[in-house]
Length: 438
Ligand code: ADP
Ligand code: K
Image 1 (cartoon, rainbow, N blue to C red):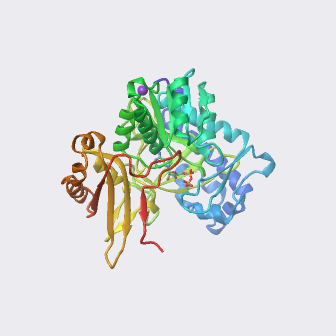
Image 2: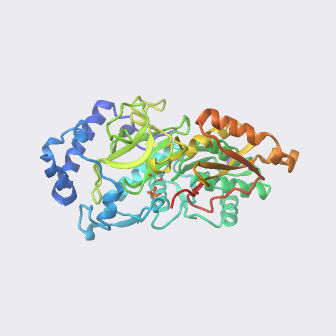
Image 3: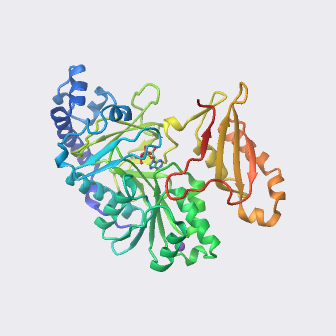
């Protein structure tokens, strides 16, 4: 696939590293001068900006956490006066009170640039039409994808999330080649097309760029088959910029996303100790912005679990690649002492053709022990063939057994008919209910 900025995307590592070091020094100067919170971090440790000269020096500094943004809400960590902000967004607040983020005009250009790179990696090309079903508004997804697609030279349909029937009519009428939305909403749209009797080959879409929530190969398969597309993963978070921090290449689709390292420097650290981990090991992704002006962040603790490799990828890009996010550190369920991520359970579903990746996990503690129920839809073809019998088959036990073997947790599987697990109505979908918490 043609790259949006081939020179930057394939910059030989020594040059990329030199660029990162130089940009880091500028970013450190900026926060030291302009953000009292960071000046304090330096002073408390007896550090001067000149002590952070290279990316290897970053571990001398503490992490910046979401809590720090909350405590300085709304503008406390900003490095420019309010008059210099071109736009404000807020995180969707999946895990608590929202936080406000801001952009200068220059930041918005960087945002558009990294999203344009991401869309090009996902299969997008100038002249193609993008059906953008990410939510518009305070959420960074809608406007973020929008700006990047325009920058790439695509035509954008700014449909936003929701009103599924209207979405599929628009897709049928306007014939876009690409769609952007959450993976769970892509599943909803695939269902809706099916209900209308439109087959995947009849759907104009060829590419889907999906993100904003964790997903696995099981969902990739269902979306690719349901919409007749090639689906890639886009990752990002408001605090760092929004979607477009990284994206998979559509020709690879192995779960590794190129992380645009000339703008965002990645570290992976131990979730417990915070110590840096070697490439290839799973830990919390920590990101340092290298070019942000309004809200520069040093060592931002994303809470997202992944691993990275700095081996150049098959596409020829030299930027680090990160694995699919397993979940947030705070999505982890501890069930009878076993650590479980919902994505681990979801991954098992890929191996069982009689079930669909539509499910809900409920955790309770009726007495002393935790209990987990997995409500899982059977696949449509299986249901059509066996009807209600499909729900009473030994399939549930087989799935439970596989999960026990692969993930180490015992749970009760309840099989449910197709179409009855919760669906995304446009945005992120909550598939887990932990009722043990007060
Ligand atoms: P909120 O934290 O309120 O959900 P954001 O919209 O900024 O606000 O969401 C960013 C978070 O969404 C990331 O930190 C990550 O947990 C999740 N996320 C975004 N893209 C992906 C993705 N491709 N895969 C998994 N998780 C993702
Ligand atoms: K298609």
